Image 1: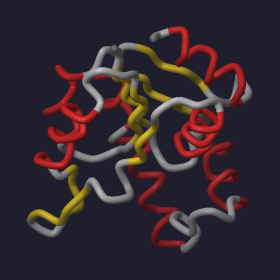
Image 2: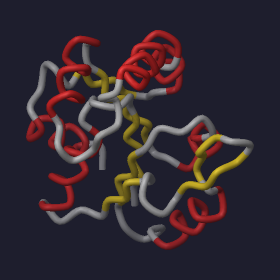
Image 3: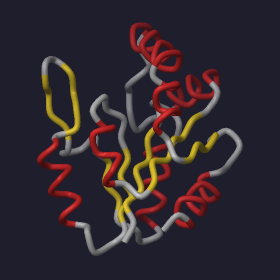
Image 4: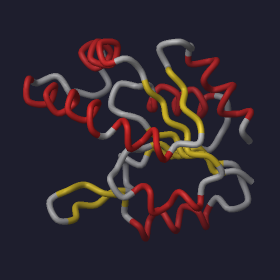
Length: 150
């Protein structure tokens, strides 16, 4: 059974892809909800909860999504690490237009998004097995590519 980790900056399509995979009947977990904790003033993946998640789904396929500084600790448990990325202007437009999440709309958060694009994205690219530019594909095509990895 395969565990696919989907990562990417805010506005790249992680939540949208997970929602579609769930509709298609796949097991999905958005780590933003119930799998993080605060550590030294930063939100990180809760190692115990993530480890339990691997055990819970060891006999079935699972798509996990998130972006946290300690995610690399878990890469050995994933069959694939897939990075979703998009051009900065498209990402900012998506963040500004989305209604499901308010992150990235204040001037301070826009600055953080831009800084992450410049400093975090290269690190994510270095750790990814597969990179998908979501500006070039619709959600159906992205889901098909992810499902093909199973």
